[in-house]
Length: 604
Image (cartoon, rainbow, N blue to C red; front, side):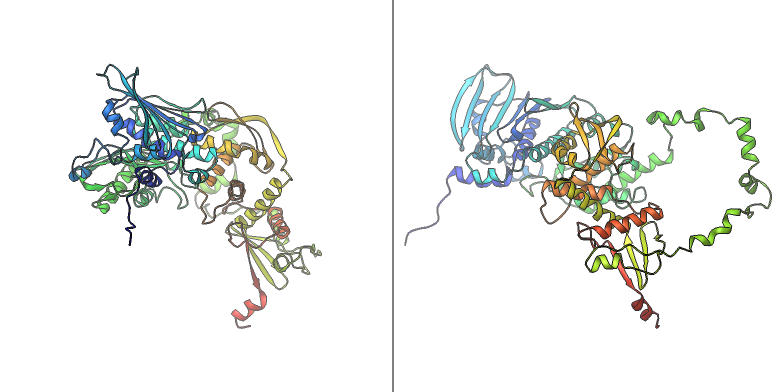
């Protein structure tokens, strides 16, 4: 019998390790940026080509490395930060496991240039398949430049699993912004295919948040500051009016390391519970500092999931800190006219009440009803009320026929009398039939109608665009700008005419006819939020996600009052849908109530 257990060759072992650490270009970006921060740099430049597939390069002005350290850095589990097991529980640096560079060198071609300030010359190293190809002295500036080229060149199967360039660029921007937000005292820049996407000057945390997330947060941030013996919390949360309908700009950092924590997110959501609706999500960027011995950051290779020694204490402190900040904000609310100069121009603000206006107001019956003694109960007779019965009495008209299938028959069953439609709770439409009634959910029904309309548009029947008389400028965060660029061609089929205008700016030249004038920017921003956080167990195509997101965003929401004509249009258009009984996501659009079944319920 021959022995069958063998040690894996180093290059294969490194490739296996790389599968955990380097899953896509964005993973390498995270590791290389964190190494630059640990090197003490105050200027860090990220350069990418082809969404990181052909090049990811990070240039810093940090300490640099000696020629020996430069070579050792690419060995597995080689690190300057751990000497014994106790050091694992005192970690305050970003990288420490000694896996990143070895993993990168296992799946890409790497070029390293580095120099310490005290050295006369720097070191140049080329590595391929975990093997050093070239090592030689070079002239270089203080700091380190590391370039990762042709990711997964030696693992074609892994390369095939990478997404589109736009999708991979989104992940890169995401990782970049997380590191950049944690260190506002460091200059960061991001260049993609020769174009600068970010240029983040050194400044305060508030300035960095606005630089990354957009000017719309400039006057809408609430400072969070709490210091305790156990931990310190600082950062900002968005004022309640900035909350979005989908998860958006939410960042938690522990000892300056970005983490994902549903537990702490729940604490923050609880702090906002009385200030925003349950289906809204606040913006926050919170930094928690505590003794590294109180947490374990070595739980996952990406180090984004950690364990607290006492998570209940951390939960309570975070919730209390945010509540305290919001309470201070709401104690003395102020109306800042500078935020919206149009308010100052309103007649009600800028012009005094004239004598004629005052006389007209005080002589009205409404004014007298509230100003004269014992007149609060007075209701003035209105001759128009004598025709109130007309609302309930409808002329006899034959109902329109059409459609096929059981669901369509229910929705559009013929009746002897054309009954008026009724809206309940500004959410439901009641359509009476001769043998019962149909209860239509206005939002779900409209979502189905819009989805099929959009599906027909991208299938070759584009929706007409209404040209804007005054084109609107839309300024987005870098992440959203990348995403919108990816969707431009499909959105054109759906009636949006958008043009790229500068870095993160677009000009809205036209919109679909059903988008209200003046609401163009909000409609696009909300659609992007819907798209970014589209959740489903099924993986849909980019186009399908766009169709569903737009239908969900543009659908009439509960709380909207509808006229008879609007309710009738929804009922009629739902009847014409190919699948009228449910939304694209499977929620029912209507329920049928049969009169005979209702009679049974009441013993009749």
